[in-house]
Image (cartoon, rainbow over all chains, first blue to last red):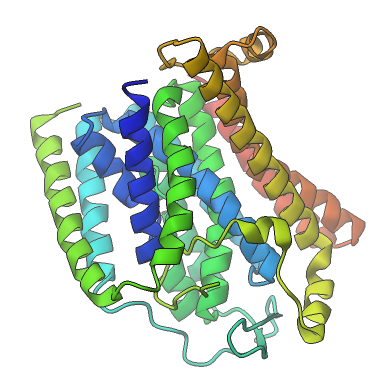
Length: 271
Length: 144
């Protein structure tokens, strides 16, 4: 009881911030669970992967309902993301918590850097003869037809995203979405929806490994997952009202503080 | 309802869409109809899995609070889960909720294999089966 409520509140906070900023909750959740509540990093990673499955299933269902998800492409790329998650999950249970904290610090720096200018949209979206599909743009109501470029590069990025996801318990959309949009030439909306859809099965692949190794602590994972589902709802409503540039700058500073905390943990070895 | 901002990587859409679906114009309806095959199956499976797992977790929390137990920090062995659910043990509901949650995307993959086979799209039956095999390998290699 005493432990459930702070964890639940941290889940809500991570859900609100993640949805407002458009990044996965895991990037915020893990530093809060370790830094604020003093939990071991492997417990935080185990709780985060569960939350990632929950949010991906909820958002994934909505995007599929809106017709934005490229289901066939996601199936192809999932071969790479799940292989990456398999390797990452096995590595995560083997390596020291210090090393995990150090790697997490690097990912936090990358996320802070990637937030500098927002995401750029692919310049020309057109059918390519490879996995052509279409969706209705929710703003204009027009039908957008597009295909896929450079599938092998997309597979490589998906493997890396899956690997980072399995290793550190985050979704990995921060890596996939820019590649899918800029390199594979997908419209940003479709890239976000498709990336999010793939995250569920990717996270499940490494969650199976964490579960069997006892890294999923139900007293942390369950309040976190429920909190993040609720927080994300609130965050997606608040998001449009807050001036996003200021919010981003504040958040970049926060990410840097988180990164320093992780590096400190990596050196001092606070489990 | 707010639309996803272009600069958001993960957008968390509103849960009411899960239940109500998206309002459709005739044009949208036509495109959606073409995608209804696999996507429809996937959509339903994700929603049902999420509802069941959330319900199990909430029951576990309610039982935990009701009996004033300290929340369990480890999960029971897979074989004990059903017995613990039947004896109204919170840890059984926690484990069952987590297992259903983790199984939801996996069942979504199995459902897509069936849906692709129904469409006689054998290439995608093969691709999706590969994804499922990786998950099976992970379950075998991941044994503690």
